[in-house]
Image 1 (cartoon, one colour):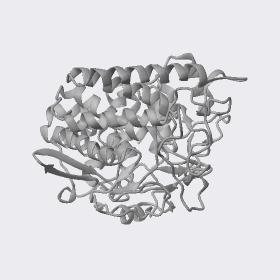
Image 2 (image 1 turned 30 degrees about the vertical axis):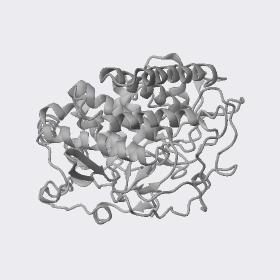
Image 3 (image 1 turned 45 degrees about the horizontal axis):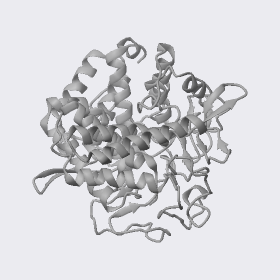
Length: 475
């Protein structure tokens, strides 16, 4: 089954059957217990439960407490396989609705738990296990986006015209797939100061990331990666013998696919290149902290600077309405795509990833464009407004874009608006989905999507810590 999901047109019962969740109706009729029963949870964290108890005892809006209770621990409840391999923690995290681990999703799924690691050693070991598992995957194939727990398993996509090897689920080259593991390792170090997992294998994986980024600058040739698929979905394959449309080598990195897993039109994907700048600087810092190869650290810093300068020169477009804005994709030859897509990294989410300041004039102009009809994938309906994309289709807004909007706003009214839309989006299931129809939240995709549940939990917890009054109205 492809990760591209069919649209659910149902409510609570269908979601329960699809995701295997256990229901108990002992709670209030409007907010039944939909969290997986304790005996069936994949991992238990004392620190996470303490956060849930605090939020539930302090927030008066019962629907928000219900949603937080369901969404914040969803990854731990449903997605974890935690073991010990050769004396080191090893964690496989499924993406929710299929038994595969994405480098991107797995990093984001545990992100909201990182501040709790100092209070819970088992949780710290689980995150370290994610880092260790990601290293194995990067060394197996840095161009792959997702992997099986079983290294000998053959993918349903084995007929893709690319270099598929056993253990790889899907081989869509996306820049962010290599940025997210760096983001996770860097924040793990910030929170714990533990460098014990940044061993020779981890260092080799980071060197592999640098090598892959350089290959995809395509300064001398197209590099080794190509991808084609026999499919009716135009966005699931690449033109030009699988290399994508031509680009002018200007220092930016080519990404064959977007983080929403649709093929790029112009291969220089701007949000992902911004993310790469942040990631290269972070891993260079880590190399110096652990006294690793200084030559490699200097190369990482130099590449970050090269990409940053190219972004400044080529990614900013003069818009007749908004002034200077960021393009979503460019080819270095003068062509560009003015839009935004919902999955993160996105133009909207740049400050969330540490790539731009929320007060940057170009970002603010871009934000206005993204959240308007001038973005072809901005949808507005009776229930919500937000960014979608070609992956699901017209009028299907992604909650991820609404959360990104809330996380990058300093305006109470806008944050409250985002919370209200998300509160209406769950389609009576108690969980957040990949997308939903702007007029009907019961029409949604992906009943089981731990990444967005974790992201929503992060948004609710951040709001509780900084603006608790916004959560104490309504139901």
